[in-house]
Amino acid sequence: MTIVIRNRQGKKLSVEITGPDEAPVVLFSNSLGTDKGMWEPQVNALKADYRIVTYDARGHGASQIVENASLENLGADAIDILDGLSIAKAHFCGISMGGLTGLWLGIHHPDRFHSVTIANAAARIGVPVAWQERAETVTGHGLAPVVSGTPARWFSDDFDYKQDALAMRTIQSLADTSPQGYAAACRALAGADLREQIRQIPIPVLIIVGTRDPVTTVADGQFMQAHIPDSKLSELAASHLSNIEQPAAFSQELRHFIESLV
Ligand SMILES: O=C(O)CC1=CCC(=O)O1
Image 1 (cartoon, helix red, strand yellow):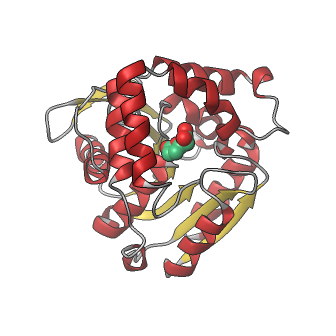
Image 2 (tube, rainbow, N blue to C red):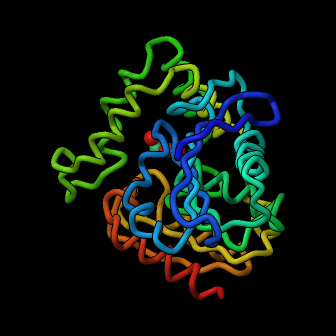
């Protein structure tokens, strides 16, 4: 079932709910330039046992474009979705920008989450000047200059993304993202640096890294593990979109982690 939830700014967020009503909830958050469809393998792997909530981050997919976005806004949208669905507590899983959102949630709203899974992310992703430049590029020239270089960042050479339907759909979702929404997310990433704060996260955290990820590296994952008290690190042989490149292993790691907590 796809529904629209208005966030606290009155903006529409597109939300998909799958699985039994009474089951434990897992809330998934997508990466920059993608949409909630990227979680298809995880939804299929978990939907018999969990109530799965996926959503398009603001300015992505079918969610409304909001000119200004900060990491706090991205985190608040996740809380607004839980509130809109009357969900008191959920497991969270986010990738890249969605993973950074998960770190923010673990710091600021740990009472709303049983656990947080942070995939292919870092306490600070890249450097602010590069995000500002990318925001300016897409504002001036649209997504095309970004789309051409993206498969090499998202997928490793060992993964034939052209033969993978979800990978190709996800690349198309990037091409379809509004430049304004993408630029706003870049600016949110430019301002996001949680390196000093992640030690405050009091809930269990699973950190998934891709050993072939050139964007958020194994060292980024090790940094998070060293600073988040109750955290464990899992390595997948994948690049940046590890949930698409290694769908079964990703889903299994997530399930084992969640089920190890009960
Ligand atoms: O540059 C990319 O597309 C990779 C990425 C960085 C943050 C994010 O969410 O995706």
